[in-house]
Amino acid sequence: MSRIVDPLERLLKQQQKLERQRARLEREAAALAGMRPGEGPPQPRPNGTPMPPPAPLLVGYARTSTAEQAAGLEAQQRDLSAAGCGRVFSEQASSVGSRAELVRAMDFVREGDTLVVTKIDRLARSTIHLWDIVRDLDMKGVSLRVLNLGGEMVDTRSATGRLILNIFAGFAQFEREMMLERQKEGIAKAKAEGRYTGRKPSARLKADDARRLHAEGKTVTEIAKALGIGRASVYRALETAPGTA
Image 1 (cartoon, rainbow, N blue to C red):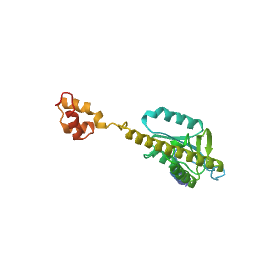
Image 2 (cartoon, rainbow, N blue to C red):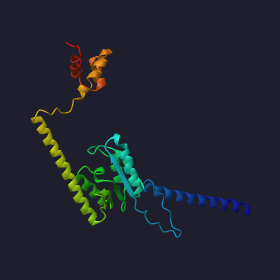
Image 3 (cartoon, one colour):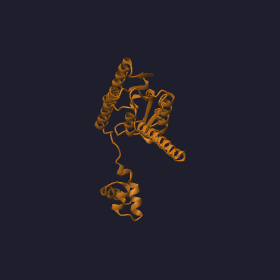
């Protein structure tokens, strides 16, 4: 009889062990499902009570406008890392274009975190855009920190920081509008004096390439497609070729 009971007890113990393992794996999977990248799974305390929420993070965002400014992007990344940012989102995008990494950074931050940038113009394209970002961060319980705003570090977590940020952002927008106004006045004056030629058409810059391709036996349609210009531009380039009647 004992020979029969012993195998049954062993099977029962193995089944209980497998059930405990399955329950543990289900708990870990549920914890990982609500975890953001870079976080480890929460570990229970010895007495079974849950661990406190993860510590707030400093999340950096760096941006330059063109690929030629790679050195500037690296400098921002170094400054953000030196400021203690545990995660930095970087991209090279126009100030008026879409910014995929900024969207990712805004989605990544959680309540208590701080989004960090080196300067305001790396983050927002205008005062209105800046305060739209600050509003969205506020709704998530996230503050904004600017490492260099008039030579000072500013954090929107304090009332003084929000006031300073608002003042400097207004000045920056005013300065940009004045610069554009002076540029328009300069262009108008140059036109009145007959000195304004404007930007050279791109097709004119490709005239030599058009003539070279035509000499190689390419058709007008093939040349236009290869250079990304219109057929009329190709005909003009060929008509103005040296020695052409």
